[in-house]
Amino acid sequence: MFNAINSRNIFLTFIFIFLLSTLLLGCTNTSDEATTSKNEKENILTVAWPRDVGEMNPHVYNPSQLFAQSMVYEPLVSYGDGGELKPHLAESWEISKDGKEYTFHLRKDVKFSDGTSFNAKIVKKNFDTILNHMDLHSWLGFLSKISNTEVIDENTFKMTLTDPYYPTVQELAVVRPVRFLGEAGFPEDGDTSKGVVKAVGTGPWILEEYKKDEYAIFKRNEKYWGQLPSLEKIQVKIIPDAETRVLAFEKGEIDLIYGEGMISIDSFKQLESTGNYKTSISEPVATRQLVMNSARDKLSDERVRQALHYGFNKDAMVKGITSGLEEPADHILPTNLPYTSDIDVKSIKYDVEKAKSLLDEAGWTLPKGKTVREKDGKLLDVDLMYNSAETIQKAMAETLQSEWAAIGVKLNIVPVELAVQVQRFKDNDFDINFFSNYGAPYDPHTFINIVAKEGFGFNEAISAYPNKAEIIQQIARVTQTTDETERQQLYTTILTSLQDQGAIVPISYLKKTAIYQKDVNNFTFPANRDEHPFTGISIEQ
Image (spheres, rainbow, N blue to C red):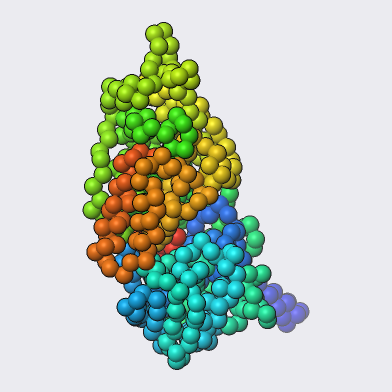
């Protein structure tokens, strides 16, 4: 009896111990998983983005997102502060005296993320693939001038142009299309315009996991030749709605929101005011402009254009509408771009009486009892086209409408979708339009190139300039000259003339904003407007 009871007790005790140990083991595993998950989360940066990252093809455009492409694919040359062009995948280069031959000496220690070598042969393959589709890439000036690409040896690549074109090295720094896909990423026919097999690059990040329109996870490229990122992973959550992005950030689900228009000014200021987060504001990346179409009769007189400039309080408007996140602009291009820092333009400050006087001189008088000026039986009314989705443009348009009414000008504000705004600008179907330049690394040469190009809006907008033909000739010359002093003189003359005759009015300097959790350190904006900002970031453990 005793033995039976004792055996049963021993058995029950064994079962109890087993169950307890299992429970404890389960708790230990759960704890370990939680700890592991916590540790992993601590070294993952989660960012919000409004659009899917796209197919991660270095040679195509939308819907692929620039920041994501720059995480995986790299250029021969990178763009630094102040426009400094620095060695990247090319450790050095030489340019022939006639400005036509470019010889690049490639780094020898670079591997693609799959372990294959980066060399001159793969550089040529990428270039030739791009050149086979110039219908897609004709906007990038140097590509249309390439007459030959050549492998000199394993680590030397040579490119020959039909004509000298000084921005060639600067244009090599753009995020697309001249970045380099590894051999394994090419389809069998080599035509990347239709897609890539997989995203194989030399960059600091590798696309690890992806779900269209939901998220993309990039892991650190442990084979990376350059500065290895502190973070192990970047998680990009696709959140199209701006308010939803802010709510996710406040809940701690997002570590960083950065970029242009990714968060409203009101939300940025409100979150900043709590003191719970860190914030950064970039240097100017572009100038917000008003483009007045001098091909239109009412705007053909320079005095009218200048009167409109004198007739609104730029400082008050920019400060009031952007809460100081943008600053009033005195130049049509930011002065942190190459060749722009020493340009001295005519200063135009808010002066209602000066505006009225200029309009009187131009023959636009205000009849007694009327509110709108007249000339030869016509009213001085003009249309201002703006992007209906852009709240800042809308607010500025309404402010201009009110202030110009005070000098006897009727402004009709016309909201349109972005695609319509772009097309109407190209078709010369506008009186006044909002525009902003492209920023680094594209400008100043890309901006003046489109001024000279017919069918883009600017060429027609400066039609009333008496020296238009001379400006167009100077623009053609500036990209061809190999003389640095002459180049600077030409830029000074061109940009001063474009601005002083009043068809292009600088409004404010656009800036990027970033707001991030307090455990995120070392955030900086890259000099290249389109590059990702992740490499230097760390998260406190």
